[in-house]
Amino acid sequence: MIERLAKVDLSVLICGETGTGKDIVAKMLHKRSPRYGKAFIKVNCPSIPTDILESELFGYERGAFTGADTAKPGRFEMAHGGTLFLDEICETAPQVQVKLLQVLDGEPILRIGGTEPVCSDARVIAATNLDLDEAVATGRLREDVSFRLREVVIDIPPLRERRKDISLLAEHFNYNMCKMMKKEYVPFTPDLLEALSQLNYPGNVRELSGRIKKYVTTGLVDLLLAVENATGKVEFPEPGLVPVSGNGASEGEEERIFVPLKEAARRAAEAAERTLIEETLNYTLWNRRKAAKLLSTSYSSLLRRIEAYGIGKLD
Image (cartoon, rainbow, N blue to C red; front, side, top):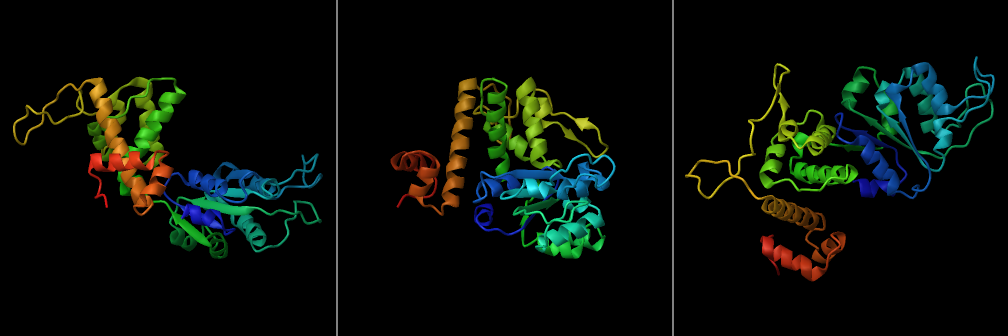
């Protein structure tokens, strides 16, 4: 959906719970659009007081109000030719939404205290963590503004509804944070990834990222898997290694065994590689040559891995 919408100049409303990555989606829409290379301007609506937000969005002329010693362009002007991202749009006051609607309807922008129209060709992308229908019904978002912003809606599901993504995201954060902290990158074991995939993540991707950061910083699995119970108390997993099935375990039982670090890394790397290959093949509808190109590997090498991992059947 992002790839398709990036090429067309429609207003997009991104919906999703806090921490699902709405700002990342907005940046991806800009980066993949013909507007890439021009400005990407983000406005965090709740962080700007209502009496200041209007002047921030539309600018003001010198002398428009006390303290306006010089003219100042608004965010719409700054985003000319690029993208204006209005984060948490439902937190804006009604009077700001009225002026926003005028701009969205194609009316010229007037700075506060100004009489001359200001040129701005900015694509507008907005985001909210609220339910759209409820936001309109409760007056948090004007219905006419909603219609103009939601020419297309991208709904990002919470992380608990896309658990297959957790292992890929975990390894992504693990690798990047190890690189950032100049630490040796050690892939997660399959058992640790399985344990991570069972958590609920009320804070979504942001929470997962925070957990990985604590783990990479401290090396403590307890901080990685700690959860908050119904009473608000943080519970830590049982000390020791994450359970791993061992050859010496009796039927229906599990034992804790020590796995050599190199073996753990090999298992995790194979699991991550297989998952990545499967995801890429599904994305390309099993066009193996296209998948090989996306994975930056040779076609023959990809075929060998498909066969080795028993992924589907070779023609």
